Length: 108
Image (cartoon, rainbow, N blue to C red; front, side, top):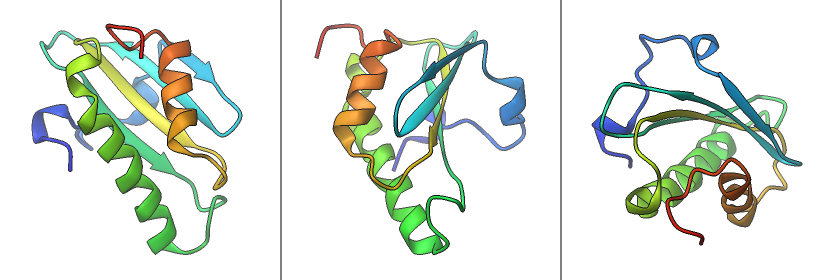
């Protein structure tokens, strides 16, 4: 689970975030700057990926775990919404799109 300071609260609408968009085959990113000293994340999985909530929640947990493990190598001051489009994604896709968006401090 991500620390509370690294989560985007539900008070702020996801439509308010998204200055920069990065598109991938299985997932998209919406990225904007925040005025904080931490980066915050949110994971969205649509019902079109799977009708079963347990599968959608499992996908969210996997992506959050990846983000939590890589927090030290991610730039600070970003709000990132990760939108999963396809159930066939894997964590390498997340790593690839983070590199494409230039979110990592160091090349992973």
